[in-house]
Length: 219
Image 1 (tube, one colour):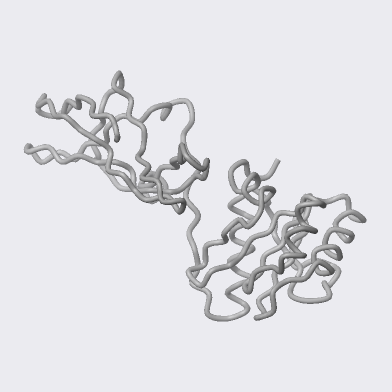
Image 2: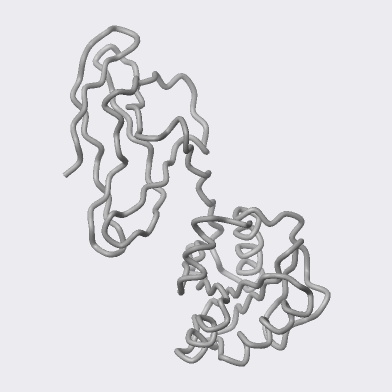
């Protein structure tokens, strides 16, 4: 259960008790943003998209999720942001803004936006066309986007990895239909991050290299 902390309104001085609302992790555990009992609440004077979300790590499975920033309404009319633990020293990265996938072009756009969100700048079409799907490239990274209904195979993963090796780049694979078991095994052996693209436009990490990349971003 989330810890309850005292929160004082900076506008009227009223004291409140506040508990972060829990949200369900994909593993089934309820997680909540950790609060700082020694911190000071601030009044919300304007809204900014990047400040509306916080990154919260599940203590059970280790996954991170983006959840609405905790808020508290004071009877005086002031909206308060309770202090979050480590907020001052470790401000969460802005949340990824998904693009609904309706076409193959949408899938490529989503992958390009996600790579940019990870920290790879100057995303462009790759010079070499992959055997299937679309190739994207930026400094230090080569990505393949497969918007077809066929799950990616071990050969698809190997080809991407070999091409990236020749260019001294890391590689990332995005697939709309997912990956075969063999493709996952190959990717795990070679250290290739795999992401599936769901129709809401949010890339989902499939293996450990993808989980690490989604958390740490571009090196």
